[in-house]
Image (cartoon, rainbow over all chains, first blue to last red; front, side, top):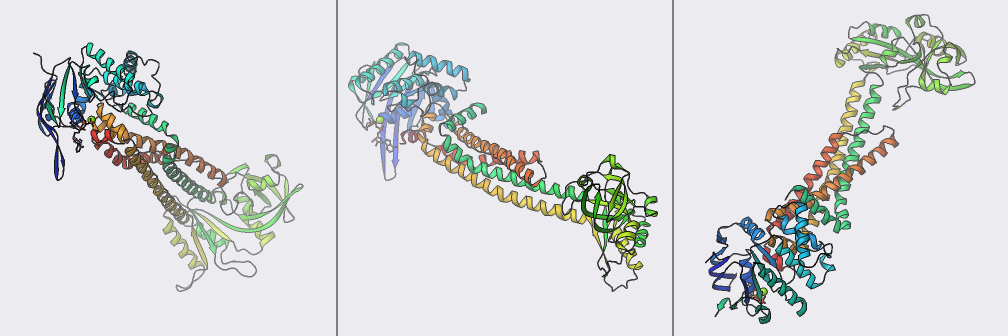
Length: 224
Length: 396
Ligand SMILES: Nc1ncnc2c1ncn2[C@@H]1O[C@H](COP(=O)(O)OP(=O)(O)OP(=O)(O)O)[C@@H](O)[C@H]1O
Ligand SMILES: [Mg+2]
């Protein structure tokens, strides 16, 4: 068996709220193989976003070990985490999170800026990513000039442009109608077909069913 | 990220909120403009004073009487001047007896100062001859009725090179025009080019009577010490005037260089003071930048979160916000320099000392506005860089 791209070993994340400690993740172990399409499902407050933050190297576990593509994340400092996000992870958020007053092209090109890619190369790759998602005629549009579905497709293009090992999508269909949502899901399936590892977070069983494997979270624990 | 990328990012950001950027820069613009303008005006005044004082003659001491009799005669005489001229430290001496009279030449006439003096007047008072000749020892000794005109006087009387050798009338008495002086310009109290120079004996004989003089101009040897020479002349005159040790002197020695030093030190201090006051407004401008950058960090918390999620390190965010503040202050500084130079050129034009600027002031202004950008930009930028990505992303 190959090295798992994601390996959580007995990971906990406890929010220290002063008098009480909130265990948002409680002793979770999970492995994801390269090329898998995994859905993490669970009701509101079950710890899905907490998990996504840890998987995305935005947050650190309070206990347990997280290895991303074999590398121990705990050993890295903030700059190290940033470098890991830059190279290995593409995010798609529920609320799109595009840079405001910035064109679709510049938005998609932004992750490449932090990899030190030159301007001409950035524009070329961003344009290619947008064209691949059928947005070739929207490159100069700012987020406010795009529909929700289009904005989310720009966000997917931005997640793709660095060619990351892992794409993390937290409720990517949450703000979209069923048609636009289905479009985004089929996009993710397509990327999966092209060999990418995708972790999709959702509370919608229909959406989750498009994944190869479902992981159920309940009160910060993985349910059987 | 390269500096160019950062600058491009900052410019595109400032373009999206032009009015805010302009208003933020205004403080720095006003600060830099007033520093540049005030320093420019200060330097203009200083060089104006310096050149007009220097045009009166270098190494110049002027002896004038402190008392005057009712008939206009004074305690100073040509013999005093001759005695001073014997001193080793004195290069030239020019006694002056002057009066005001009407001068006629053809149909033109003007009221001007008639200065009776000797041939050394030209060197002592730093005049050059433009046309013809100056007074000579011969013309002075023989008390000839010859006249040398100042440039302004010649112009008023419409006289030039062609008129040398012709006759003009001074106070009704005919004189031969033998020369016209180069203009000095840069008038401070009195136009130095409006005068008629004639032999001193001639003035005494025809106009003022007696043999006393109004003042004695002394040019000190360049190698000699002004203060020592001053003391030497004082002792000599006290002795000649038979003053007792307790008596007040009946003359006064005016030292040109002391005035020059005093004037340039006053205007130098003034320039510093004005520049200092103006730099306070630059600091106020810097605080304006800091204020806007802090607001901006708050408003753009989510943007910062997004940038961190897609791979920006803390120092990338720090650099982005710092370069934004620097761009504001530098642009403000450059606009301020342009405005300041414009204002000081305008003032120089009006005041008549022309336009001179010191490149080091401009370099200092640029560096100072960059410093303002760094000092007041670094704190907001650190705030931005330190934001936690998760809470920044969740920020509404
Ligand atoms: N910053 C925080 N400080 C304290 N508690 C937190 C924080 N973030 C999350 N929690 C708590 O952790 C638990 C899990 O939250 P999380 O956001 O992971 O849920 P979720 O599964 O993503 O829910 P939803 O579907 O509503 O987005 C919740 O009980 C929440 O109150
Ligand atoms: Mg959530």
